Length: 362
Image (cartoon, rainbow, N blue to C red):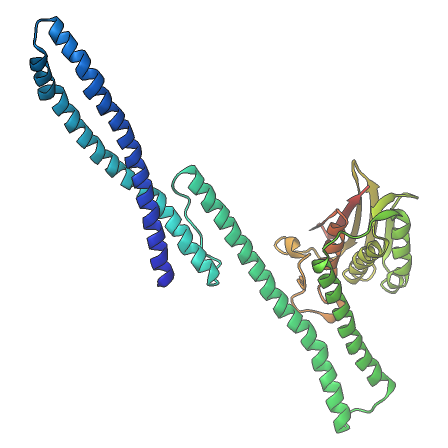
């Protein structure tokens, strides 16, 4: 209530100032007109009347009885008209500003759906557009924040629940402390460690004030190394690998971050390819950059999900299948590292193939 009262007072002040400015401008113009008529016009009128045989006093009386009365009435009408128009203009300007203030208070209170209608002069329409864009961006950030918290809680809850179940079973003697039990415990603990490392990578990227140290690297050699490290996984899944990579491909990147990007994308392709499927890796130099793409066969990703693939913790697999889904952070790390190096990332899916790509400065 206090905020609304303050906004009304501010709006009233703006309207009053606009009205005063308009009346002052009209008053200056009328003053100049009245002085011109009463001084210059009266002198010319007297001279003309005297030239035609009238006395000066008689000429002045005629002037006052006709022109002066007309000027006075015209000035009064002009002042009233100016005041009315100024108040109307002030209200027209103040109303959109009051709406912007009300919408801003709603956003500050957490209502990110608040929008401002596009009305008024061009400048106020531009202000409304800017405000609506800001509100939409805040709403999107709030959605991402809520999803992040919910997904992070789920990813932590699953291994912790499993660990708790194993430990309770060991405590109660339900299961024996053999190598298989310890292997299961280690797997859950390792999952938590990998999740914490991924979160550290994201946090370090968010907090970095300076760009990463870039140097000349052979991107082709880095791709071949990533594929060599993933070779056992290709063989276990009986995947067919097709590569189109030149012998040498100089680029500017951070070697460690480049290796992480390639390993994440290759692992992602292996994870989501069906047994006996195919993976294709291509790299080429374009005009001012280098394009690397890694595609795999498998189910198409729904079109609505494709733009969100690089969000943190976002996964198309709503069932969160542990064997395939991972933690949903790998692609977010890829996006962060590539953009930090001055590149871009993207994804496409259709026709039984899903393709992830990134570019780096050449």
